[in-house]
Image (cartoon, rainbow, N blue to C red; front, side):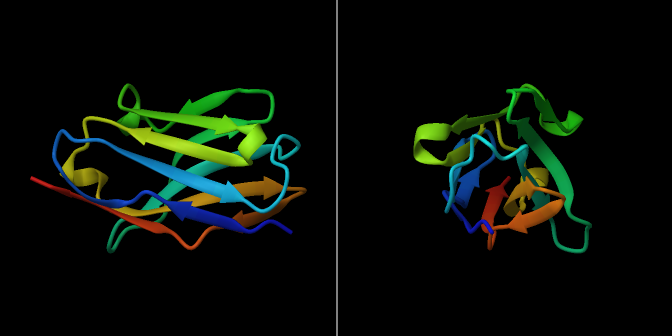
Length: 115
């Protein structure tokens, strides 16, 4: 089992930056895939970025060039650096760990981007 705790959300003006952190309760370097999802009011949860244990990274098209996902295995933490934020990035952001066909989720952190 994996517990995930997100932090770093908040209110920012359009064009600003935030860095989200997700601390895991266990060693993450063996976790096959970790990532960030988001859910805006009235919308389905969507994948934002993923990072695999081998280092492969992928992003949803809407954040490419603006967001960067990274992992620090020594700290059992993954990050999401979000730059050039837009109002449409407003959502609750969730950390995800995919372990042996089971998905674990954090509690979510609110990101609000004002225009």
